[in-house]
Length: 446
Ligand code: DLL
Image 1 (cartoon, rainbow, N blue to C red):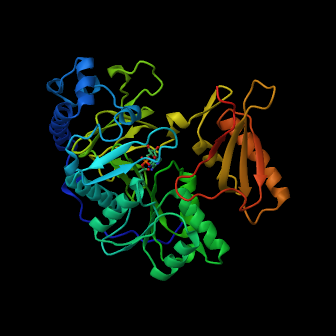
Image 2: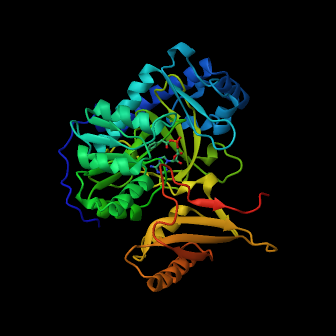
Image 3: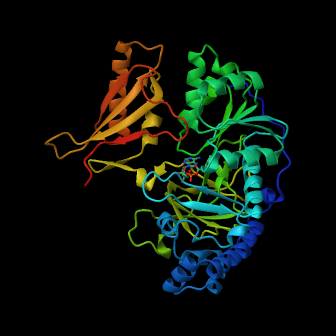
């Protein structure tokens, strides 16, 4: 258990949709879903083509489970329709666009009508409130502003909630720290690894990270673990909650975590219908939809979006659906273990960086700063992995050698892979400015 001295926030007034019964919610989902599939079919040529090819018509959607008969949408579809081919409204009704950074190929472009922006802000406000943020609080927003949905999405949500927003964006860490000390914000919005960068830089500047005015952090945009939550909560004396989302479906605020339970993000099911499918089944059809509780790939259908309705979007995020708790009608998602396309296959063993984070943070001598390097040594047919990880400042080189052996053993036991562990000097690995790159794959391309 994490110990900290942050008091529970006052009980908030919730949206009506947060408190409705599951039956009421499903009735709302069905009517919104029927509208959305018909709307997408009528207005977006790609959907008409795909539905016709699959021999399915919007009128075939009579109950929620019929959704499984409709074709999936992928990132590739959005790329092919670049830039605006998937928009369902004329350009003059598009109030804003965002785009993914797209390290390879074309970026994916997403659009919002005024109503979409209002719904988005409302859902981010709902997520922040669930995570302990209250009207009147000062909110330091360190998600990057610009085409990325994090900065402006979180900004609008915090404003809609009635907070005072400090629009910092990512980077310029020393300045962020100065302003945290001067403006005394109650909450911070950032990626978990960027908050770690801030905490680390505070310590170097002689500022005790546990002594700031910050009480709540709402962290997302990349995978993180319970061990990382514990690390951040204890070093900063805050309550840290998760927030999930993706541009293609909306942006941050598709799902948010409640501070009183801290047991995973509630998917806001009045706006999105989630499904879990068998990600590794090569022939994905209706039979690929898995029951709640089973791990697989998360798929979303939007229920209210106007500019970019999205039908059965394959997120590539791996998780499972769990029953609602703090918001009983809204199912939760388990922590994202990783993305199906980020999975490392090392000599036949599947692994995700989050597994290494989980194991490493249980070894007190090791810090949360690590990278994974994958290589294929010359003349060898086998790949190898090096975990490069910083030791804690207080730990000697001798102590870290024992820790390295412990990490190597634990990875072998829990993941099943042999690897090399290289414990490096504190401060020597690159720090995060937003979404952190953990994996450096230097293997020759096949
Ligand atoms: O990262 C939206 C966002 C901004 C969410 C700020 C939360 C906070 P994209 O850039 O489109 O959008 O990236 C979406 O990031 O498919 C996941 O793989 C990952 N991701 C987002 N939130 C989480 C999270 C934003 N809480 C992709 N845990 C998604 C794990 C997350 N992964």
